[in-house]
Length: 346
Ligand code: XIL
Image (cartoon, rainbow, N blue to C red; front, side, top):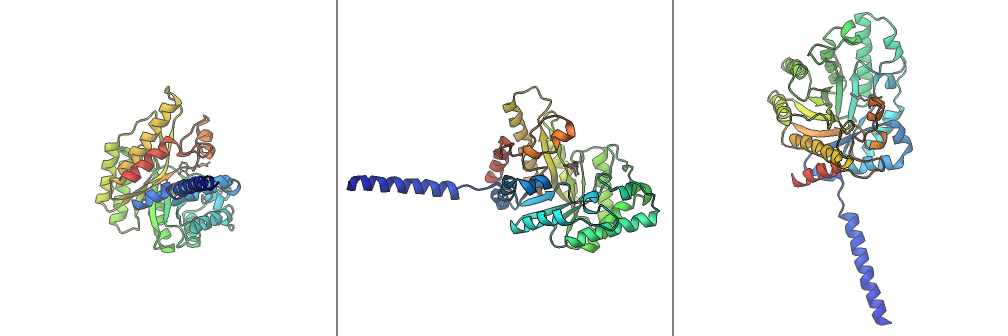
């Protein structure tokens, strides 16, 4: 009998030891990222945030930064001329604070997601300037001290390096970009202010034009801290990482930071097996992170979504896909493992 009790106690001890080890031995992505002083983020969409508990658990466990995917865009946050809608973004910002996550504000000036009261009316230059100033200053002041970085201006350039035709350019003129940065800085002098775009990570007409514009703003003393590379990517389109590194370096030379702000990697339209696709996707995430970790002016990477379950890509492309770090069932994918490993080994 005594022997049985003894054996049982030994087994129980072993069991408790392994339970303890598996519980406390697991590090989340944000922990290994933090050890590298790195901000690893995900964009947050309000509908899963409000209804899917697993979504929130994964978000807070794995990421130390979040971007609000849609709810700070003009039409959402300022739907009528005299109405601001802070309810949902406030909830998400509060969640970030409770979980010691930083918040990236997205976005103050963009050609898309404009409310009808802006799109459908003809304003004079003075009127629209005053509307934009008051929009920026109301939103930035509301989140003063809570949003650490703003995407002040989003996607203002065409691929050929000319300014995109939008209501701000047409009515206010090219100076709307500089004014937006000034107004944001006045409202929260401590927030970092970024220009954000896609296809600007390589070296091409668009990225050159953006670089020259930011260089000139910086030279003239405008408050600008960095540039966001969205990096919406696809495994069918290999990137030239050497060139991206060069681009990051030229920003370093003029004192600007680079953040990867909206990364996802599409796997559709490939003739490889699913396993190979996911492996290729993992390599792209890992090469991008590596690039960032090896550049002293790049300290943040945000994925555009938490899980494949709610990614914007299937809607956008009309095709199924799985572009993120977690699959539909919140299981970590090869991409997650790859960047986790990089953080651990760095
Ligand atoms: C996308 C969102 O993910 C979608 O939910 C929305 O319907 C459209 O906008 N570049 C940006 C982001 O700067 O704001 C976009 O987000 C994706 C492309």
